[in-house]
Length: 464
Ligand code: XIL
Image (tube, rainbow, N blue to C red):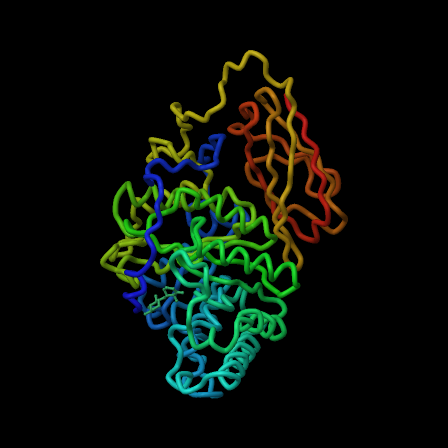
């Protein structure tokens, strides 16, 4: 592992992690029938929950049991890297990666491909190449691997870690960079041509908050979008420790990228630490993703602490014996809509009485300020998830209802945090017991999954 690189990471100045504030303004207490696994709970929020997987551990029964139970996305930890898939030039080797893909397919999980072009973990033969020969070898690699896995990959990290740390905002010097500044867009175009169905991501670390490096990536994505270079998503590795803590503007940074018209994903999450402090950090990250409608999923970089590339920092959700840690409970609770400041995780069905953002139950003038509803859609071939945000007007709501009309061919298969009057055509969605009350100017979110194509949904909101 590249330990030098970790040491050289720029320290990011942030407010104390304990002071981080999430954007949730309404307490949605977890219900008694809340999902009990990370994957199921994330799916209810229209997202995935994934983990890095090592092929050689698939025969470990503790490992596999947790993998199959908890996760619905996997990223091969090393098996799809250049050194693994093309150990000698034009001779491809997919055995270990195929084991992971086969397991994923068997379990109904999706796969994030990682990574097609990267300065690290290159096979030795690449060192002998430069200029056009290296550029062509890289493009051939992208084309061959993306073609081999065509149709099996949800998203590819097409290019990994191409920007320099520190304040320069420059590209990282590497053999690939020395083939010309356009190597990144060339890689993305080759990947799109090879597998048009895969989402194509740029992935990096130390880009988790706003800083010179993330600004440079932002400018690149903006440029790609304006010139039609195919890019669909940006991955934020999110390897955190006391020297590189969760930035206070983590959510804002995800949101500004999402506003460029790309999905954002948390791709390699691990947070060194233990106990409540670690749990709170995991909760903050999870909540940030939930608060950004284009944050489509979270992947942790390994299952048990002992599986981690940074095992001594115990940065994951399960201990070395496969037991759930406090961090696990915090993530699941956040995914289930629990209040991040709830003091009683042992009793998830009781709302927090001391939640500072809870709306006042004794509001003397409820319902005169109306409400508004906005929708965001995550569409795929044959189905979509709609996330609807209900925002109270100038006074609190005590109940609300949202009306929308689904296009023909669209049928709701499940909904969360709302009751529905019908599953197709004109549908009215009303609050459930715990989210009717919204304080003035604040919001709650509900969602549903549907078959078909969303098109333009125009929700209208009424409040009492
Ligand atoms: C790490 C793996 O976890 C280790 O097993 C391997 O020795 C080195 O690479 N950024 C990335 C990942 O994009 O591919 C790295 O994974 C961690 C940092």
